[in-house]
Image (cartoon, rainbow over all chains, first blue to last red):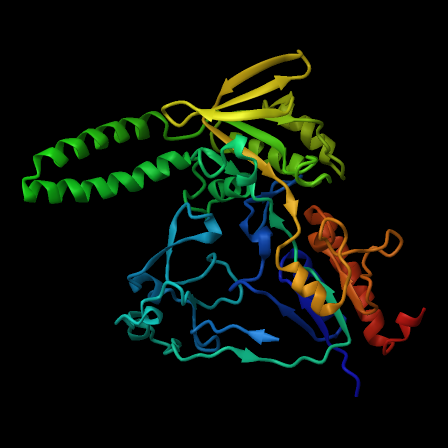
Length: 56
Length: 384
């Protein structure tokens, strides 16, 4: 059977959102990240504009 | 796909942190831009996912051929495995999404701004770490020169003790004089309260990136507002060419910054940054509204460094066969903003150009939908 998996390269905010959406659609997503933790640049941020919400 | 070893068995590690507490090796913390240290077995940040510790083999004593093994002895879950090897995983996939993000522009390339040379000139991402409650200063706006001075004070205390036992009077006097000066400096300049934010560092600059990095105006305003929340006496000056606050609620945020948080927007590009003998940066700029060249002495300068394509993108693009644009971002077509030059490979987020978080998230959902379209139709959607 043909594969229904999706490869996502980069586990920052964009990669994580894409992986979650694909998972919600019932597809298998493989999220590849070079660092020990996912989150990317956004995990390094303190708050986000324009609402001053915390990032993590 | 190559899976790098963590030297910690992920299924066993409970992330209790006992290993890092006992580890004898300290390493500058890259996550916080070297403003503090972590151990050779570490997690990038407390909430990091997967919640598993990782050994840094370039610093761990075991990997330097020295005797240690403290973490393996401490670990109750028996998760430490120095023998772990890299694994190769074969994946058969129907679609690929490239979300490799961006890299900060290397501000040392603009030598007149003194980044890397002047301790109190930092990048905006370093500022985020200083403001963060989980950061090196637990959210206190300590000047980097003070962080360095504090480290030097600890070192001097040890040296003074040694000089005292050795009766080395010449060095003792020298160390004590340095300690006295440093302690006075730490007391005088502990917290940064007069901040300068410099926009377009590496972007909209014909020497480097011609494009606008799009999110820096907003994050500088945000950092200035948050700094004011942390320390109400903070004064912030934002040096800009033009403030591009394009997005839902962004213009209102800029106005709020000026009206509520008292930010001062100064139109003019900064020519040079020097420092006085107490590490206070002095900014030279042209105030284009008054048509005068001026200077201002500040406690700390924050550079809004450009969003650059990551260096590792070239081999990746070559491997996947996707085209890059002239700035090394993934090339996309305006009418199909998520499609790369290869059918079935999509890209989202800053991999294809500077984007803020709401735009990145929106693109990510769209890319997921495009990938699902391809997968669910068995590739038929590609032919359309």
